[in-house]
Amino acid sequence: MSVFATLVEHLADLLQPLLGASAAAGAIVLFTALVRLLVHPLSRAAARGQKARTELQPKIAELRKKHAKNPEKLQKAVLALHAEEKVSPLSGCLPSLCQLPAFFLLYHLFSNTTNPLLTHQLFAAPLGDHWADALSGDGVFGGAGLVYVGLFALVACVAAFNFRRTKRMMAANPAVPVMDGQPVPGMGAMSKVMPFMSFFTLFTVAVVPLAAALYVVTSTTWSAVERAALYR
Image (cartoon, rainbow, N blue to C red; front, top):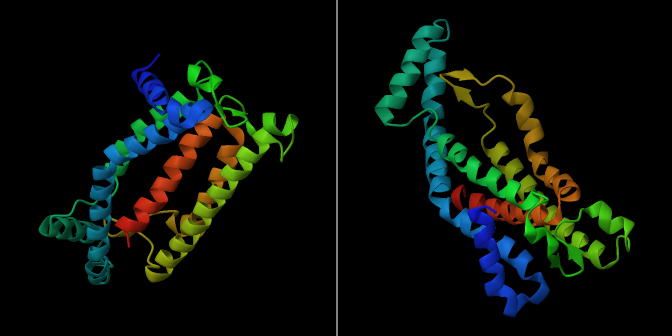
């Protein structure tokens, strides 16, 4: 059993007097929140980098007009601008990429069928079961089904919040992102799809084990609140 799984089990033991049979589910939520708290400095660094690159966009636009007929000179001018302002072209991306291994590891932990945590329950729903198991049991409004109804409702609220926030940000800053002075290929189409990406979490919750769904819902909710605070 991994170190992470052992830590979550210890958390479940601590929460047992408070949450009873749902202690393992509470431990998953709490452990996910603690991990997100630990990587929060990386999120802050990504936000600072993104803001710094956004502030350079007007100057980059001027350089693109000035060197429109000379791409090589444009690229050198953009790189010189970044060096002068002490802003890395990837300053908003690298911190986010550094977080991915931790998130993939947690997802694997909570979706691994050999994890003993999956033998526990959240109210009437086993942590190792899927939404399909709840539907084939007592149905949508059975004990397990209602657990998923609550999760879907929470995910829908978070997705709607992200959708409105993304639309507002795109309306306030409609420019297509650039790299080395040139528009990033495909970003025009991606920007149209991006506001709807949050709703994909509904599908994820529906198809993964409940333990993994709790991780996804907790992490997604944390991200929504964190980004709203950092990018306000």
